[in-house]
Length: 376
Ligand SMILES: Cc1cc2nc3c(=O)[nH]c(=O)nc-3n(C[C@H](O)[C@H](O)[C@H](O)COP(=O)(O)OP(=O)(O)OC[C@H]3O[C@@H](n4cnc5c(N)ncnc54)[C@H](O)[C@@H]3O)c2cc1C
Image 1 (tube, protein in one colour):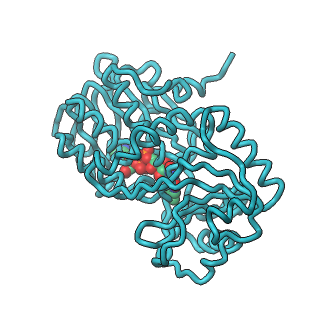
Image 2 (image 1 turned 90 degrees about the vertical axis):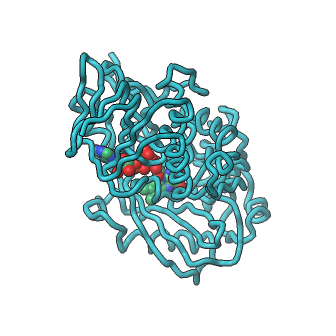
Image 3 (image 1 turned 30 degrees about the vertical axis):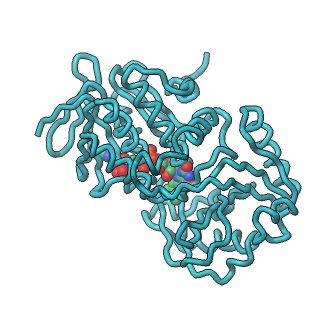
């Protein structure tokens, strides 16, 4: 097989599928290749659905704030898909003075970037969400944060991109990217070769293995993250919740189930969890212990399913969104470090602009791949 397009995208997650959509909307011919048998079956269909600005690295804020203002509110209409976007705010909760200090620091840096976020006390927290326990003594409150359905969002982009002519091929792992006349032009798969003027690698952690032979190494770690979903409960609240300690985060979905993610607190001990592909016995109980302290009303909720996914944690916690240094035609979008869903649409929109010679809506300088080079 040998096939040509203007752009080849490797990876059909939120980044690959959304970039395919924004490129196809501009009349660019796109072929998306994914190793898996289903679209978006990496982190993009397994995440906690948080669409938040608060708690982020200030370098990401202009991009995510732009996306939350300009893309998310009308995305369902644009994709003709119920992405279940709910913009009812994010409470990041604290139970100790040390937590409040952490939250204050995050809040101060976000306010300096122009984000509407403020610290509130325990009474104000319970006025917003009466289900939270008296152990919560304060929180950061960002009214413009929210959540959405990762599966329908990713598939919505896929569906619209296809309608606009983009081609998606699943079960097609890219083994190698080859240069022709000094430019990245060819994606090699077990079935043959695909040629294009430009190649975007949006393959999560696996991006690293694909760009390394071309001399571009993005320092990243593969990190497991787990989620759980409860059976449907009556409507209780619409905010996204998180904590200063990041021991759990979550929200109630539009059909009533709660989706929660969290950490065990045992990660520094090198859990065996990293060695197996699925969810483990440790994560859900640890996450639930956290939830029950903050949120006693859910103590009897039944968990119906748990799952795990991999995240691509970059060395400095923010993504690379850039044309590769020294390899013309090669674009890279990876290292979203466990929070790439909320920022994904804005990152994809920006990539489509850059790849067609346009102006991205925000400065992409913080996302250059050269930032990891040794400074003399
Ligand atoms: C449990 C969990 C909870 C999370 N919660 C949140 C949250 O609440 N909010 C938030 O913003 N983010 C969250 N994230 C992070 C978010 O899901 C990711 O940052 C985001 O989905 C990354 O999208 P992506 O398109 O870069 O990668 P992925 O969705 O991982 O897509 C990469 C694709 O590349 C394909 N691929 C890999 N190698 C090759 C190859 N050689 N050839 C062809 N295809 C290849 C894979 O099959 C995959 O489909 C969470 C992640 C997890 C795992």
